[in-house]
Length: 188
Image 1 (cartoon, rainbow, N blue to C red):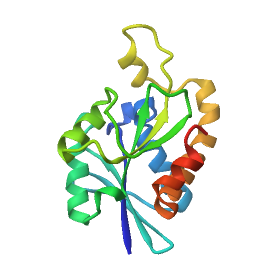
Image 2 (cartoon, one colour):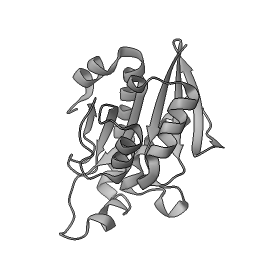
Image 3 (cartoon, rainbow, N blue to C red):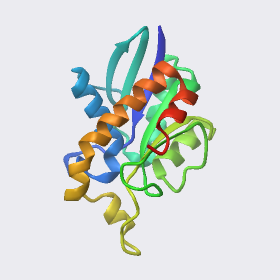
Image 4 (cartoon, helix red, strand yellow):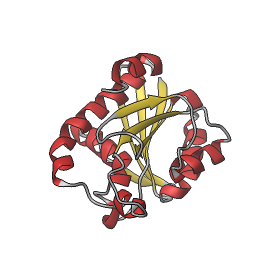
C-alpha cells in the first residue's frame, strides 16, 4: 500500500485555532471530519490515517509550532518510510488572493518560517507544497497581527467551499498524482 504524508502547518493551542496562519490544520481537520477520521496525539504531532483505493493518507499536524515544523515532518517521513515525492505540506500564503490554491513541487520558502524550517531539516527545496491564499490585505507593519488574526466575516462565509476544494486537491494529489492535480486545481 502506497503511503503519503499530508502535513498541515499551524500552531497548537486554542488562541491560534481559527487564525489565518493555521489554515493547514483547518484543512486537515475538515478532511478528517468529512471522512470521520480522528486525530490522536503522537510524537511531535497529532496524527490520523485514512485509506482510499489502496493508498494510505497519513495526516500530521505538528506540535512543534510553525517555526519548527521541519523536525516533525522529517521524523514522520523517516518513521513511516514515506518517499519525499509522497510528502505534501499544506500552508498559508500571503502572496495569493484569499481562497486561491496552488500546488507546487519545489520552490523557495517565500518568507514562511514553517517552510523555511522544513527546507532546512529536509535539506531540499524539492518537496510538494499546497499553498492556500490568505491575501495580503494588511497595513504596513501589521503582517504578524494579520497572519495570526481571525478570519473576517466575508472570508468565513467563503471558507467552507474553499475547504471542500482543498480536500478534493489532497485526494487528487494522492490518487491522480502531482502533475494532474496541478493542471486541475492551480488558480481555481
